[in-house]
Image (cartoon, rainbow, N blue to C red; front, side, top):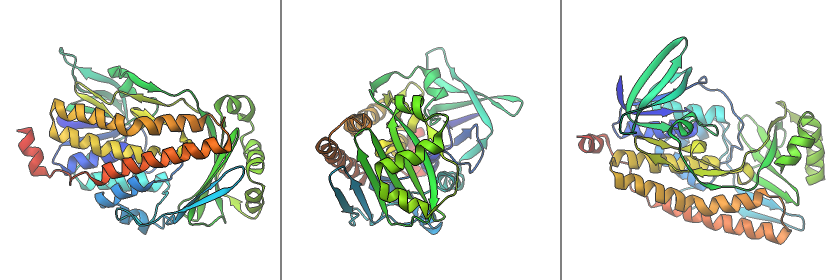
Length: 387
């Protein structure tokens, strides 16, 4: 079987990429080793660029209709003071959203299916097929008890932090982080709000993010080394202790709330930017670019790169992929560096506020770049380029 594109990984980055390619007229197969509609650890928060893209892709109404609360402001709680930033209407975006991944990923997969993507779950990819010239030409995989080989003009890895595609094509790392945080997540009912709230104290940070079904995701972060030595094995106790340490007032509010899911954790991983494309292959989402979750910007960057990559694939030229690499790195570099500094958790109040201003400036630059993109190509354009 030969198709135009195989996308490995049906989470938000892969589903968005597959959807956009199919809307451009490509024959796309989207595979995932998991199951449809399952959950995963996430900070959930979408920044303005991500909301802009969901709206432009026509899937934001489904997110809103599912009862995802509108976020109207962001509050930063520092050691000496708090600062609240309202979400003012800009580029057609008047609110932010933080959907559960059971909703966000499903909505994007459904949109990909409606766009003509062939979606296959329960497929474990274990290799990339390469021709005599070193070009990726497909994948080898196991579906149930059957081995399947699929061929494509391009293989796109959207298979996360430990990407099989990135490993098999030998995607080189072009930037690496020095710091990592370990994170504990819990979901609470009774904390209704219409804001993102972030706490930053030396050595520890926390976030409160309203999401679906009346729940709020409250996460706490400590240096990864501390997490591995002090937190692992007593997640619930460490979670409660750290919340009380960061914000006694939030700890009091939680006494009147209900934690609706077990506390879960992520031990941390240093960030990286890998090369995003090569002969017959490309990477998107965490497969190609991972930042510490401290800045809750991963999904926003995943959507950005999904669209940039889809545009490059539809153009189909070497120059298009060179432009994809350059634009992706240019828009990622400072976001990556500033996030790594924030993830150190070793700053003064003034220093972390300065880092947040720098991060905000880079998000604004990223947003302007996304808003300036022309409409996506149509299926007629794809046919013309392909021929």
